[in-house]
Image (cartoon, rainbow, N blue to C red; front, side, top):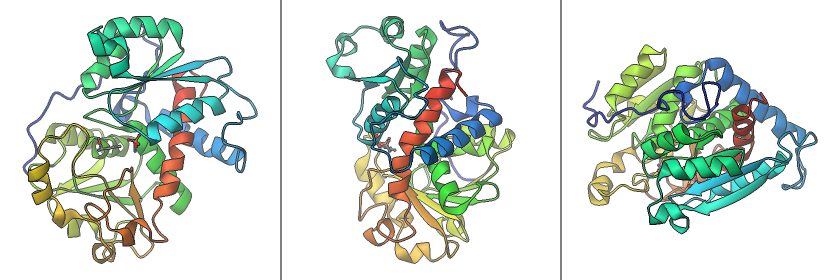
Length: 330
Ligand code: CP
Ligand code: NVA
């Protein structure tokens, strides 16, 4: 076991039972869902994707299960995929999207997260937040009377990982028994893979430079919860025979130590040479945006076994199922 970054408070639970009561289904981290619910969300995502294959993108699904419902999205950070996939996803479910740049709302002038939550949750049926600080999502959820979805924080990105698992299953069949190798930063996306490993039967091998490992406290909690997860500094050991190879940017939104990172991460770059060590039919995933020539080379991004474009599209399908789960429809 390696030296990990100092443990931060692993804030994954909404304080008390929250304003929405004990049955309110917030989607904040995969670690808080049951195994059965994670599986049900994935199955619904696969089913709905298949049912509308080839349809125009904004045409609602045949049953339009969220007809009349509104989703508000709050962005404190940039986004392309999360923004468009939730927007088109709620329309496909028959509902309506509202997109807000946090800095253009009264949040940007100091209205509290909790007061914003109290107001918005009277006006819409669901709220998605992309936040700088995970705690803001928890505070919002605690005050909200509508379900809240984590659209990425400094600590996690659970929507992304559902799309990733869905993509793996499309390309290579059931996730059971697969080995996933994560190379690079032990960041928010990596942490949601760890949470997923608690709920689904796959093996996760994480290779990061010293000082950029996921928080040890959370790795230990995941292992205790049954996750098959190992952390190493050796990218070759992590990738050996893996069915899936994943990486992400070396400098996430909000990271301020770019110079140090650019020195530490090059041995973890995913190129054609290191891909040779994975299983012969290994697929490549990246949540995107990619920094071609840094964490991944063109030859890997654009290879026939790169599943990154399906992965991006699957954000729509996975999140539709998340929204349905939040509202008790699955
Ligand atoms: N992968 C992802 O969340 O992309 P965006 O930052 O474009 O939303
Ligand atoms: N780790 C990246 C993911 C972007 C979707 C970030 O937080 O910037």
